[in-house]
Amino acid sequence: MEKQKVLVIVGPTGVGKTALSIKLAKEFSGEIISGDSLQVYKKLDIGTAKVTEEEKSGVPHFLIDVKDATENYSAFEFKQEAEEKITEISTRHHLPIIAGGTGMYIQSLLFDFQLGSKEEEKEAKKIRNKWEAYAMEHGKDELWGYLNQIDPKASEKIHMNNEKRVIRAIEVFEKTGTSILEQQGLDLTDLSQCQYDVKLIGLETDRAFLYERINQRVDLMLEEGLLEEAEYVFSLGETQASQGIGYKEFFAYFREEISLEVATDKVKQHSRQYAKRQLTWFKNRMSVEWYDLVQMPEQVDELIESVKEWLAE
Image 1: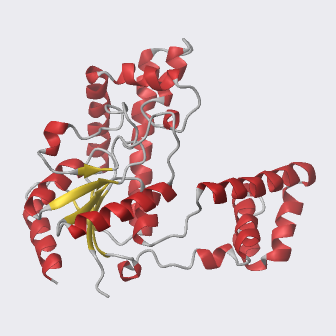
Image 2: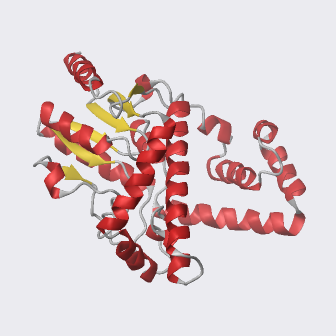
Image 3: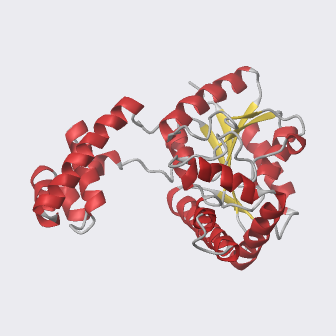
């Protein structure tokens, strides 16, 4: 059976994924699915750099503003909902375009990862709590020793001081009866193993230039009302949304523990670090065609031609 074609645009924050996705959607009758873990939340617009109605230019967008900011959202839910949207879009004979920088979401969708439902995650949490308590009582050595008994191959690869990974390996073995190494056996650089016919485009630019763009972007967000948005998230208490970069850094300021200048510097620093992690993720884990449309906008013609050829295959 022929695989459904899906165009995916990835890369760090601040490189123009939104603008490119809209341009390509117009060029190839596309509809866009957000692959961003925070854009699902209503009222979190400025800090998530959410696409505006004007920017959309009439192009349909999905998985944006689908959750209240007090709710949780998981890779499992994203995968389920994105698969449904891909089917709907392709039924309309339009091109599904995924645009976003949340690596785990993109990967779980493309490679058909078997992620746990909410009920399975609750069960997994019980197992993790059990082994965290065991480690506290008996120490990391004995915890690793147990892993060595049930899954010696995994214990060879995981250092006993990495308690989190040791517990994760035990959890996988208890749930599946197989080694975590077998679960990780999928070659994520081989796009032929995807459940879709994927064209994976990545945007990047010079690191120093990218960092300067991110700093400027944060200043612009503050002018647009980021502080008020962060105060709203702060008022919600402990939520998944409150962990978002661009919000949590202001909480100490609201508690009068640090100055606004220090909080703003933290947002910039964390945003730069996140951009670096995003780039590392996609470069190390997935087979991406990279373009620099920030410093070399003329590359867009080459990119469009490449998409045309892929669609004609």
